[in-house]
Amino acid sequence: MKYMTTYDVMESARNTNEWLGATARAMASYPLFALSMNPMLALTAAWGEVTERSFARMVAKPDWGIRSIVGDGGQDHLVDVRTVVEKPFGNLIQFYVRRREPMARKVLLVAPMSGHYATLLRSTVLSLLPDCDVYVTDWHNARDIPVSAGKFDVEDYTLYVVDFMRALGPETNVIAVCQPAPLVLAATAYLAGEDPAAQPRTLTLIGGPIDPDAAATEVTDFGRRITMGQLEQLAIQRVGFKYMGAGRLVYPGLLQLQSFISMNMERHSKAFQEQIVRVARGQASDHDAHNRFYDEYLAVMDMTAEFYLSTVERIFKNREIAKNEFTVAGKRVDIGAITDVAVKTVEGEKDDISAPGQCVAALNLLTGLPASKKASHLEPEAGHYGIFAGKSWRLNIRPLVLSFIDANAPKPKPKIVPAAAAG
Image (cartoon, rainbow, N blue to C red; front, side):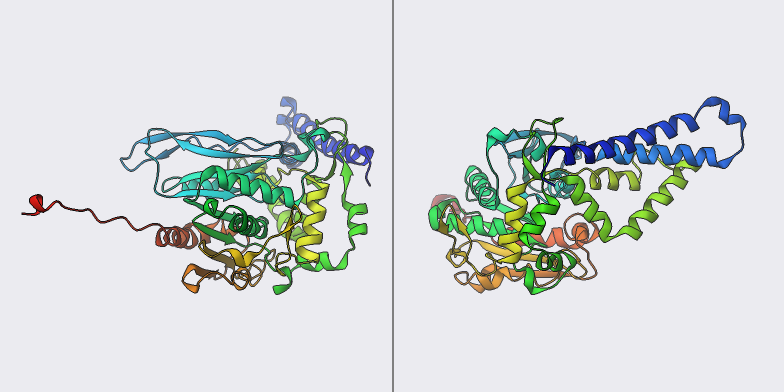
C-alpha cells in the first residue's frame, strides 16, 4: 500500500466521482429537457448536485466562517483569526474580537487530529467566544507538508501542546476534545516536571481515550484485533505528486472517512437519499442542515503515518498513558506530578467512540491532585459529537465547564478602604 500510485488512484477515483456528479447535474439540467415531465431528470440533476458537492468537499479545508459576535452592549464585534504561534505541523490561532477588552477567561481549545480539520469545533468556538478569549490548535494537513519538515508523532504532538501552553501562560484554561485528551494530560504532566510555572490553571478533558480498556468500543476492538504490521500495510500510503507533501507517508483522510461512514452506513445512506429528494423538489438550500453537517464531516485531512501508528500502538495497544508509562524525548512523564491544575472530565452516556469510563480514568492517575480539584460529568443520552458541539454541549456541558473554570479562578483581592475615607 505504501506507494504514491495507490494514493493517486484513490484521489483519481474521488476526482472522477466529482466529475460524474457535475456532468449529471449539467446534462439533466439542459433547458430543452424542461419540456419533459419525466421525474427522473430532476432526480438525476439532484443526484449530480449532491454527488459533486460531496466529493469536492473531501479535499477542501473548510473556512471558519466566524465573522462577528454580539457584545454585551448589543453591538456586533468583528472577529479576526490571528496566528499566535506558527509551526510546520500546526499553528496556535486566536479568535481576536475587535473593540473588546481581554476577558477574564482565557481558553485554549485543543482540537483533535483524527482525520478532520480543527474547524470541526466551529460551533464550540462560537459558543465560547462571547464569554472567553479563545485560542485553538489548528493542525495542518500532512499532504501539504514537505518531507523536509521531518516527522510528527505523538511525542511531537505533546511537545507542540507544551509550547502552546507556554506561549499562553499559566492563566490558561485548556479544553481537550476527544483524541488529544491523553496527550494534553501528558503535556500538563510534562510541564509539572519541567516547568511548573507554565502549567495551565484548569484542564477539561472531553470524551478522550485516557484508558481505552476501561470500556470497549468498535474502535478499541479494532485496535486489539489488528497487528501493527497489518495496520501499516493496510492503512499507510505515500502522498501523490499533486501535493506539496509528495512522498510523505500518511494515513489518508479518505481512508479515515471510509471508516467513519462504515460505522453508521445506514444512517448516512438515508441522509443522502433524503437530500437528493429535497434537492429535486427544490426544498434544499446551500446552507441547510444537511450541507452544514456534511460540508464539515466530509472534509478530511491526512495524518502523518508516524502519528497515526504511534497513537494506535502507544495509546491504545500499550496503554502508556493509562499505565502512567508515557515518555517524551526519553523522559518519563509522571501524571502524578500534577498537583495544582484543576481537572474535569466529561463523557457522553451513549458515546460509541470513547465510551464512558475511558476519560474519567484520568482522575485515578492524578494521585498528587487533591480531590477538591477533581471533577467529572456524565451527560445522559449524549453521543460523542453532542458532548462538544451538539445540544448537550450548548444546554448543559458548556455552562458546567465555564462554572468549573470560574470556581478555580483566583479570588479577587478585597479593596482596602483608607481609614480617613471610612470615617
